[in-house]
Length: 57
Image 1 (cartoon, rainbow, N blue to C red):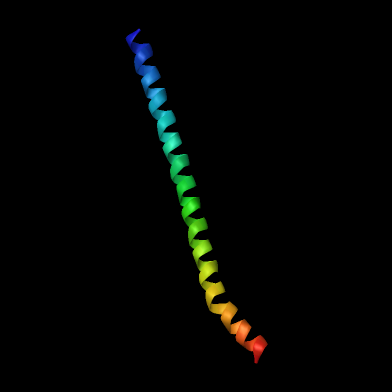
Image 2: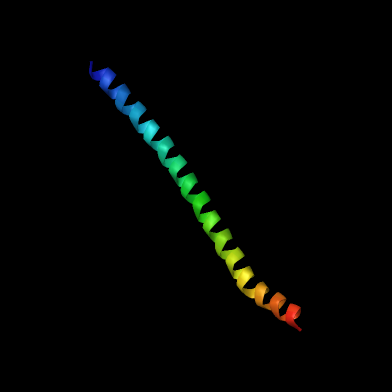
C-alpha cells in the first residue's frame, strides 16, 4: 500500500514537471509573438510616414 502511494506521488510529480515545461514553452512562444508584434509596429510607425511623404512629394 505504502509503495503504491509512493509510486503514484512520483508519477504525479513527473506529470507536473512535464506540464511546467509545456507552460514555459508556451509562455516563451507568446513572448516571441509579442516581440515580433512590437517590432512590426515599430517598423510601421517608422516606414509608413516616409512612404506617405514620398507619395505626396
